[in-house]
Length: 293
Image 1 (cartoon, rainbow, N blue to C red):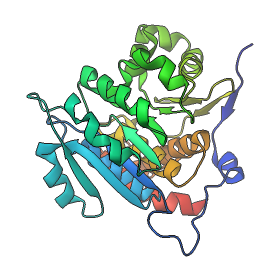
Image 2 (image 1 turned 90 degrees about the vertical axis):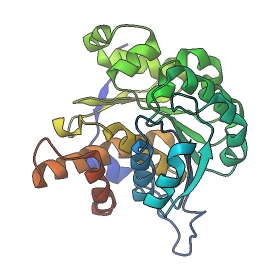
Image 3 (image 1 turned 60 degrees about the horizontal axis):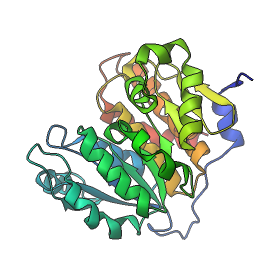
């Protein structure tokens, strides 16, 4: 039976409001995020993710990134705690860093892994380690998605479904097919990934599609071409992580994140121009958009 496609709009979001922190909440009860990513080629990309998590309302952020970028990141963002990880000769997170992550993972509510990483092999090793010890909500993005089929069983067995945020090329790698095949039936493809991995899956694009296992698919078409720019996906992953850390269920957090990301893009298009705004310019719009609903 074909899936029904539901429209993601402000009416749906108003009917599924975000959790509101208690007036006496401290930063830990607001939600704790661990972001793992970055490489020498894109040392600042993970900054977009962690700021997005803060703008989405998370109270405490820890970042694990390559040693050569850690100090600069901590100086640029005094709001976060930064942990440096060993790196390879090519400037990627080294597999030997897996043990150092164990304590960090146990002290967070949501883990976002993959932003601004480029080595799929190293990222796959990191993913395997996280899946063996992580009880927090997981959001997987970018390079960690490229060899996801190596981890199908462990991913499907997570106590809480992970959130996957691929663009079409990454979804093609996940499913082991050509991007052209996905274009023929994007709805079927995003559902297949969701069902195979027992995860909430976002297929990013001019119309973003969001699926959870065994359910109808949501569609959001409001973002605009300006969002097709470097760092935009890093922002989206961070929003999902921040909302999950606040206690929002996986699907609702993902739907809210897609809408917030898209509407921030619409505001940037109106204020700056339809193309040419930067991914970091999305961030300041997020709190106001949440307040508006």
